[in-house]
Length: 242
Image (tube, rainbow, N blue to C red; front, top):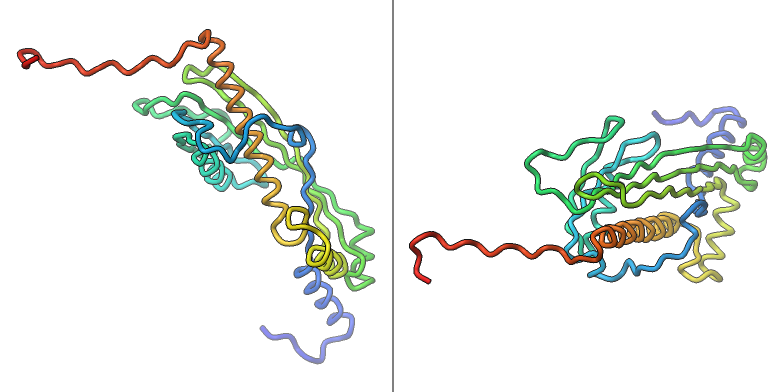
């Protein structure tokens, strides 16, 4: 329904603030626990996990779309050579593999959850008073609990990662950072648009690959670095010619 042109000035100002906030958002990604550490593997290599059969189980939690997480991780591990299957666990607890399914070498359970959210009431008031020149700031914190098991269910690796996203709403912060991105900052340091998603995905996928690599090394150590058993040749039927 169209807005009437004879609205009071304070009502029109309120709609103007809402419009400016909705179009002026800058989100910054901040790695916290685990994600700021260096990794040894190169996620761009296509043969890091060649011959590896991996089953990903993404557990549904508050504030996170587990199906999107599983789909993105499947693409990331597949690019590194792994044969990946996925499963989204909607109910709490572990799910069982299909009884007749070909068992994977490794099963990775990932629970991504929101652990905190905060907003400054003062920044919200100042944002409205200054018509979004002063930004409204909100923070969201997330965590990923990761466990890697072998086909028998033995835990090979465990890790928890934490990160924070700081959202600033307002035409002032959006305009200033937009100009800096356009004129000063190199592409890899820009903060407007979806750059924060790319940075977070790069860190998370790289560290999850490192967790899987560490798990595979531990599995080899437990087997005393014995190579995988070669497939047995098919037996000839009785009475067949040599």
